[in-house]
Image (cartoon, one colour):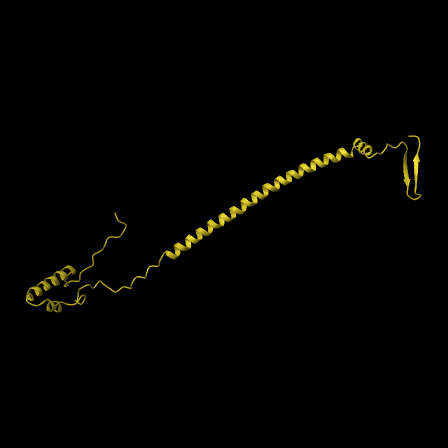
Length: 167
């Protein structure tokens, strides 16, 4: 079944022939003229026939229509789409390349930070070892210093060394 409504017949006014009857009458009239003018030449025959669309009942349903618009070419649109896709791919490639470069730089900086932490730990250990009393005594002996037998203090106002005895 179709969703389109059924076509309704137009009522034919009383006393007028239907379109089918008009077409049959016109056809028989043309056939009679053709039999009567068989002796005529081809050009005279063409001149005797009515011109296209000049008959009173011929082609009443035809009408003039506007020429269709020229279809636009899809080539510029295709080029635009291709350029957009190429531009997007190029930007993704550039972003990916810069991120990869950043990842290598980040890796090298992490390695450098780890090395600096190791150096700091080694220097802190060495500082603790050298700051210990045993380490200081050893370094003093290496420089030729002797342990003090008497402790003393320096008085800056009097510019003298005050010694304590009995230790």
